[in-house]
Length: 225
Image (cartoon, rainbow, N blue to C red; front, side):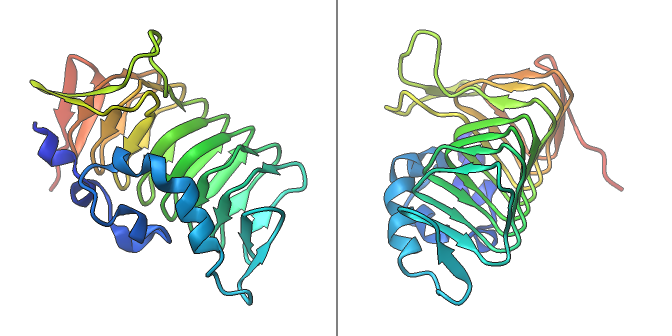
């Protein structure tokens, strides 16, 4: 397992996000975090008015999206087509919610890109993170985005360590990653495509694609026919 296995191209299908241009010229997904806010404002002003409506300052919501009255949406934010934002969701801003994505009751988002069909449906916190196509976070699972010592986040991958220069990084979930209920993804966690985490997992560092994470000492490759 090497860091090169966790590049943007190895984690995400960029055809499955309205924010594909945000990732251009970048190698690793955390490199987009500082650009999300400005990107939303630039893209929002170009969205077709027959399909999107502007709701407040720098907030664009697709006319086909469903947003419950009790949800809070702070800008800048784009809610893409066919998305659902349920009761008491708290979108603090700098959030891109993909086509067909579900943001559930009491879920909180901040500085994130959620690709199409993402599910964060029950009591999730997702901050300073990128969630790939069809990624799913089980009830109560969260991204922890700040270290206890408040130092910059370092990405740990096998024997490799990469300084990011960023104090806040949550998790990067590859396409179809599935996070078990009540799991905690520590700052700088990266989960590969089609990988599953058991419920109550506490994860740090990188977990390769097509694996099952039972605990830090038991990460097994999926068996396919």
